[in-house]
Image (cartoon, rainbow, N blue to C red; front, side, top):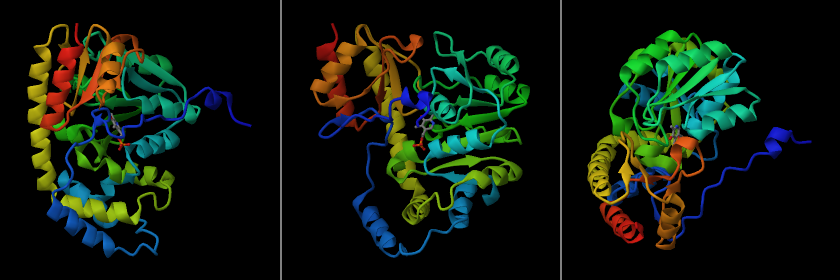
Length: 344
Ligand SMILES: *Cc1c(COP(=O)(O)O)cnc(C)c1O
């Protein structure tokens, strides 16, 4: 009764982080300041939860569009950007979906759920992307769509602007540029928006992971098409109201992001000075490192109540790699102390 491909999958697993220092999921470690939290709670209390949400979400889409000087009709909202990846895979032409590897796992996972063939383009050992390889695979597969995470997860690096432009101009299918880490990279690709180029964003990494709110930016025409496969009322009333409230206080979060970026540079420096640790350049809110024995370090940190992501075994290019989200300053210090004890 259940397809064999589905039977062979494992359900999405997030480890229990109770009582742990949580550096595994690229969350913003800071909560809202108390006074803002109270104002937010008061605003939430006024929402009419007995009614269905506004199905069009025009006010929220307008507030989001304003961030990039676009029209509200160029914004499509999703219950996390994961849901938009699903909409893109549902609505796009049949045919192969191309993804660099290693990259964000949900692209190929959702493609498999939807019976879409997937072709991969391996990164170089420095995690660079060759535009020629991408275009070759797209041509060979007569591909329908392509996902490019800029910066890439789990490697943290940002592929060259020229590489992205060359691919966006050279591939006739749908190019999805995923800017989940835009707040930390500062490099946007909205100038590339075209009928075959869609930008993907999320509020998760900049501080609102619990809201589950992602969005796509595209041409008015493309967004109208994609909107046809959006579940009615996919954004709930509390998410809508919260996001509008938080956008009105955006500067608070921008200050937190500046803090996280500074901590990223400090942690990167400190990690680089440890014996046996290679730190890869990151434009995101995490650092990917290579160590002599990733399993041992991962388990040792876990025993010390620090949770990070072990990338070892997930891709040949990620042997002995670990991914560490940037935490609060004191959390980063504890991580460094623990690593000093654990490294040979
Ligand atoms: C985290 C992440 C997402 C998913 O974000 P949600 O909005 O929380 O679903 C999408 N793309 C990349 C590259 C990510 O790292």
